[in-house]
Image (cartoon, rainbow, N blue to C red):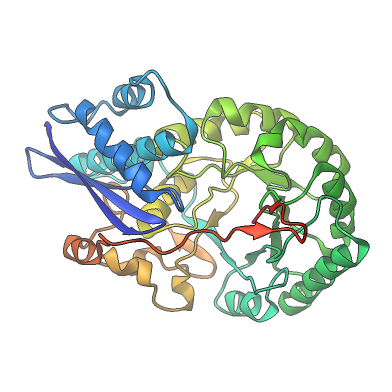
Length: 381
């Protein structure tokens, strides 16, 4: 078996796919994306193709080494995302060649379903009670909210009171049998985190995600020590080397993205390392269905899986992003869990005609907003 072609498909500013084809007619798919930088990642994928054309796709670890390290410069969000998409496609291809789902190749299933969660946000607030209630009515028992407003370096008491009041409303809407997670998007300073996090304890928050910016990961131990709420982080970390210090700092949950952190190969190793620190895995994935399927293969294979992020929300109805799937039903949660995928490779079937019809060759929509403080200074979104 030899690789004959590597094709990329840009569908939006946060959604791109890669297809690896072989001379025996088999193909594998991956999601090679980085929110707001998708064309840059696709250019990196095309650059990496020289290492793949004519190669045997089956020795994935060896190819991963070449893709990740062969250009001398390595790591970071763009290159790691490019490798991640190719890695997913190689695993999908290998699973299809053997007639087995990827989690079987990683040692076999450790669970029959994977818990998923949905987002419940509203403009100007920290959480939308109605959206949270809809997720719960559709079977989910974990929802995540994020403040949809700026946070100053030392937010005022009124701003903190407002956040706590919003979270109290969400708790009242879903009851005390449902978990609520809070994503701070790196908007807190360390002193603000120390001020805010103890106030969340009465609300029973399941975890607080990314309380500080990733460049301040070396300060996380101070945040962990001062917080009664478990800390999660990792969507902007891209390797085992970057996760080791935050695990040593005592985070409870790591959140690598299978489309950013080197793919299935590296995220599996991050999960294994996390297990030695008594930390759990909750992969970041507010992306498309291929990234979700790749994440789920890890969820079925690693013992220390906690929950899976998703933004398809198929439990609430149809999803535009799922149009590339021949059968979206396999990614539809049942009782807040997605049943174990049993199809070969990533466990999903791509409608290639739908992919090609959805390609966007024009200017892409604007990405994340840029927020400014009242004095004109930059504020984290």
